[in-house]
Image (cartoon, rainbow, N blue to C red; front, top):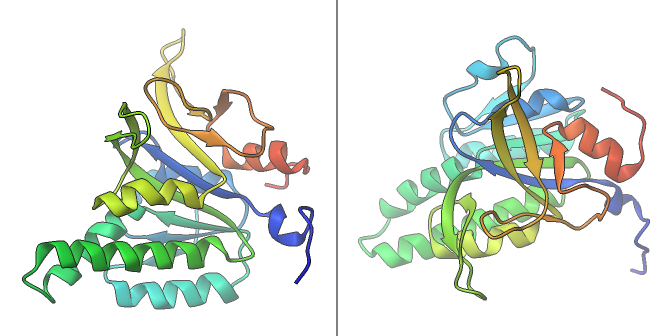
Length: 221
């Protein structure tokens, strides 16, 4: 089927954000319109002041229901928090099926990659969060901060699934107030990318504003 770069599918953002514990990855769900939060983590305390729909996931079977809800419900954004936790859940289940550790990692990698592609390809904006770890760049050998997941297969391949990969930074401003920013391009410490070409190196940690800037939309939150 012939299509163009201005087709409907090109109008949905596919974003991966990683950062250390407590950086505010979960709270980013409150910066977008009509999100569905698919939560593989226990902690949603940072969103307690909001009234947002949550689909709790405790097993890979739960992900089938989550995908059904994400694909049929009236949502603008699908938030998966986090793929690091989800990979751990999947690995635990696969280890129960075999005594061969490498086989469990391989099966887990295949399952998670297939699942992430399915969610990524939904006609919705997608935001996935991940923990942060130092990973080895396979091309340069450099050690860079990037998304943390179980197994080399996921660590290497997951960032390629997304058009936007941001490192989430927190810092105190001159008034001592904690602020958060996205790093959108790679440097010698952090892996990141912006395929849209519309973003500055540093952007406010607000996915709604990122949506507006990349897609030239009005702020609809």
